Image (tube, rainbow, N blue to C red; front, side, top):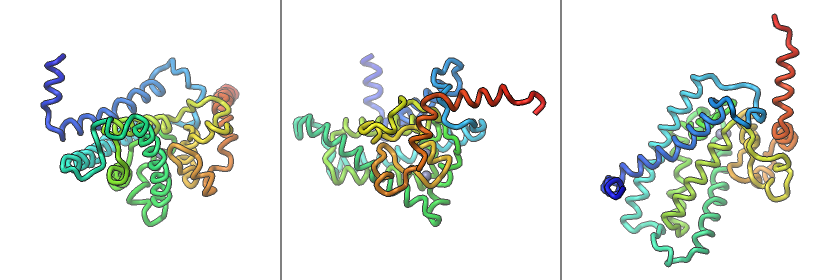
Length: 274
Ligand SMILES: [Zn+2]
Ligand SMILES: [Zn+2]
């Protein structure tokens, strides 16, 4: 084991960052895809948000662009590493410097700031002048799968990863906090694009949990385009009047499993020669 650890430790920084970034996207996206779309025993199959499934060619395109996004993120990660080595950033490695409590606060602050950055960058990318170059490719997935989470055009991938570059110059962050931030970001994004609702009934209307975006929340953004721009939280959409007017109703409908029941009934009622 020590030999393997030494082997990893001896790898050049750029290779560790590239490998880590690829695994960080490929493992959650492929696991969620296999679990939800390939496993017949998927316990969430009654909670499919949209009736349709994307064709295999669309999923293959999502995989290709997710890999490209991982490369862009890794390139930026390597730049951040070089800035850190030069001592230009506020990244620190000794917990004693700010304490554990600050570490927890900085993680929460990074998530809240990222949500705000994402909301406004997302609104910007929907402006007709920017949409084509930055964001159209992400919307090619009308009924997203876990692989759609990072299916970005290169310009959008750069814009998305720039948040971290800004963060390390304005907020002191421990290296581990950066890893936790990345893991949370990728997991929330993959889950949000899963195409199935994982949150329990009542979440959207709940006074506290309703502040979190559910999977239906972002799925509706893909199917209707100009509503629900938020990433982790619902407050920016509520504040700016961009929440889908039927979001709560659709969420309850999907989370109750009624949508799947009705689709099944419609299928069995359909005339055989239709
Ligand atoms: Zn969008
Ligand atoms: Zn999306």
